[in-house]
Length: 203
Ligand code: GRF
Image (cartoon, rainbow, N blue to C red; front, top):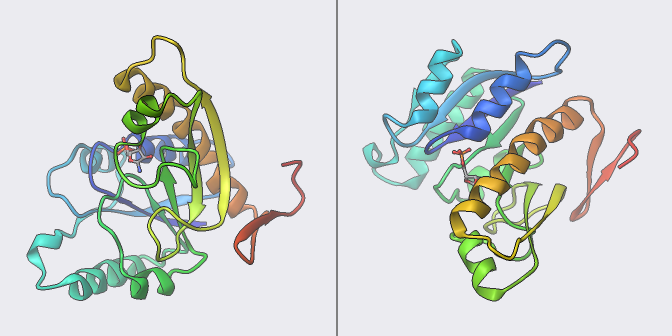
């Protein structure tokens, strides 16, 4: 499966995908990495792995549509079949999202549908919930919404801090993103209405 990974920052999830793709028999490969922010660590990771790394800076475009046309053209040029949002911090219009319907996934650091948006870990700690989490889902026009592919519930310890919870959540994210992409690449994931149905897995 031909992947396009879109990032805005450090790219630790991108790194997890790079590492998985370099393993034997992994059924996906990264065709292009796109960052909307110049000079970020994730772009370095892509280059270090010998991948095509492209900056498409939203600030260089007149409006959202022309920015998104550039994203779309870049993904299409590289024959991308699945777009993986990995810490991509721009909201995408419904026009773009619908062009990639059921072909674009996102990772979000909460147990959706709880804690959409930013500062998920701090908000969970403030509320005193006992479990945080992370979710991989198909992207729909509404932010942090769409058919859920995989989730982990992550216990919040008594002495948890925002920093420790962010770090702990990332360790789950890094396992989950390659696992979800693998299932999709194997053709085992099907969207049925607003949910995901699995074929030939024990999930
Ligand atoms: C992750 O927590 C991801 O869930 C969220 O943004 C963060 C990106 O981190 N969408 P990284 O750039 O992959 O290190």
